[in-house]
Image 1 (cartoon, rainbow over the protein chains, first blue to last red):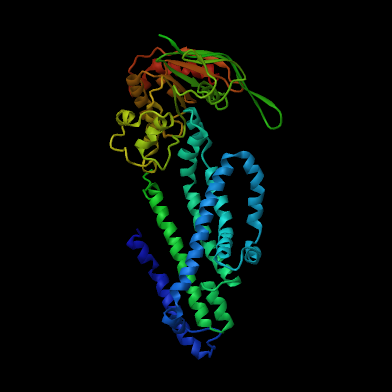
Image 2 (image 1 turned 90 degrees about the vertical axis):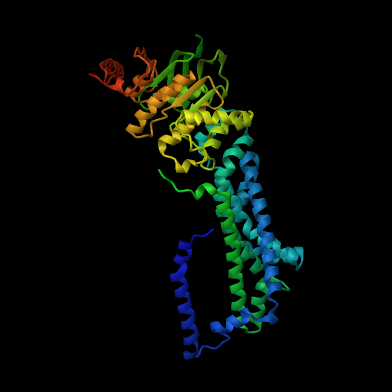
Length: 256
Length: 254
């Protein structure tokens, strides 16, 4: 799906990364930086591959929270946006809440969910969902409302129903907006799941980071954070791949 | 020959936000015969697009009578095909799918209309482009798709709102000749809006001149130029005389 030119385009950045890692590895001992403050890359690498760590479990738990929270946010976000665009009184009723929720730092309320819903996976998923939900609603609504009014005229001239206009014009027009919403939302879902695990968890990458902090195991914290980054990249990449498949017309070159 | 469009004393007022009433159309009375190519010409703001929207049922007159094929227009009518200045294609649909849009909306039999869509694409000179996306087509080609789309459900009346206004002069002249060829092969009634006087005379059986704010019919001139009309006509002085007459009616010759 990616052209070789894109891959080659990454080469300079990768080389820079390798140089920085090598510099870090060689310079840290020279300046006598203690391991518990800044572990060297080789220590982080050992931690990343540590077979006693049960990485599969922790990555799995966090990935599950992200995936479920994100999926619910995506489905409900798109559905709520469609309903709010179609039904004006619901828009009037709910829009202030959506805007307010955008401004609220949802993370601040995260501990409350654990109090109410219990210290379990469900609470972590709810927090993830909540953090990822609102950009989804707002982006989808923007997309649904960005149909050219003249296009609506054209459809109306054919006696199109409100539902026809939604299906034939608004949803396809909204697709690029929905995908950019999904990308933002997936990044936020990673943050949501991590913070949820900071608050309370028995497993997961966020749980590991908090544990590593308590036990002064900086290499482990780094390793967990790196797996989180990789998780984020995988989610983002999957959305990007689906986006390319869903909008084949975007790939075609413009001749005029 | 029966009458396709009847407008009787049509007035249209707009109320601006400041509460001022703007008269867009004043006492417009005209008829268009079936199979006729009628052109509305006038400066920007003369209400010619509004008039077209009223005929198509997308807008309502403040007073007066509007009939298409003998029936009062009380909302959008599907016996009409509309082409706007912007081709308004759906970028996510192929050329063929764009042409088929009205078939889907009107819930007609797709399998029956597909060959017709292909025929129309041939008629507008786009054979072989069925599966291209609009993003891959030139401006003139996109407008051809829009014309094919307007014809797919076989409406008796074609409303065209400055359809070539966004095209360059060369493409525009080509498209005019093409449109006449398509019109002669389909026999539709056409109401065509433009602000180009040469275009109006070249295309029309009749040119209706509207003045600006409010739109009033200033002239209703039958164009007795032989058909088929080709680019050669543009050099004839009969043709240029007509253009000059219309310029005079618009107050451009003093």
